[in-house]
Figure 1 (tube, rainbow, N blue to C red):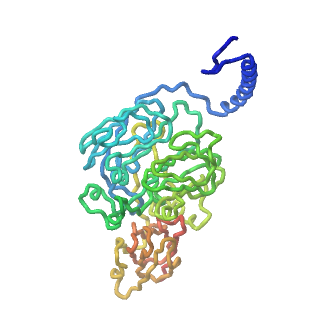
Figure 2: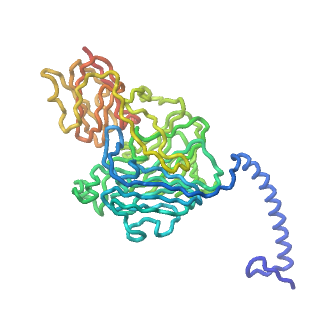
Length: 486
């Protein structure tokens, strides 16, 4: 009897051969059908590029301390890369030789971990386990092959509790060597948290931990603000689209808390998890995705519902304290009262639209993100503006001047509409638990950040009607009006 080994340990008989023949014929028929279908699919893609030849990509990341404007009127002392938080978005292609020079200008030692990238142990970053920490004033060169393709990230791996929380992180995107799927728009959003009691001096042990942080167990940090790409509220770049656009949004969680990110008015497909492609048959269609610390999700949507829509963390106090942005269609404005202050041109009230975070593909030296200084308004209310303070500021009123108080609650102004006489001293007092920032549409008065328990005062001495917003919560309806009469 003839024996052929088709699979190890399996002896083929004539009956086996007959079955195998039928299977081969069936498989060939199926392949013929699939080949016809594949032609349709391939032809629907852009023309395939020539085989990619890997290149050497060189970057420099300077870790340093700097002032960072999280939101107009709210500046913090941060640690980050290349003067920005989050750090530059680095983009390479699969197979590239990547060479990153870390220059440490911090007052403490640091390292970089390449999260999700298959690097040699000595390039992985954990101080002590895989490398000696890079001391202040020193440099270290990380060198590795970029693999696998997908949404990856980088962050400090020395004193990680403090250094990541202070801003030492960024996106690391490895594009496939052969790009088969293209998008009209692509955005990256990195979630993180900010503790107002944490500072570089606290991280160095030069100042004591804040009263709230010192009461938390296990070295946990309290959280005051919730960031996307190092910003809160209107300072966060929106997703700007035209109808029909196919959009990829990369969601990266660099914080210590989970965030369920919810899109209004749209469904999306999860096309990659932790940077790794999800087979089409397994792609879930959702409107909310939970992102745990360290996770990444790539979500794909089709812009098929024109309007202006929210994107936010669905833990509502996270959204109320910063973690919210928008999907904005070309030419669309909000259908609610916020339309009255949409894209105020004089710069006194931040425009609701910003450019997307991140560098173009294959850009080796991304420019730092900057925040423009507000343009002084052409006309003012001749207001006497005082910094936010713990008192109500009424002592600045002229003798005999009237004084009124607007209560700033966490979702509204009380009263919402106020009529006062010329010369009245108006005080906004924050009686809520969130941070707020008051700004008139015409730029005639602006407060900067008002913390819980603080106040902001100005003198309404020019007749007219003044629409104003909370810069942090205008999208949630915090809009008011002051009418000044003779």
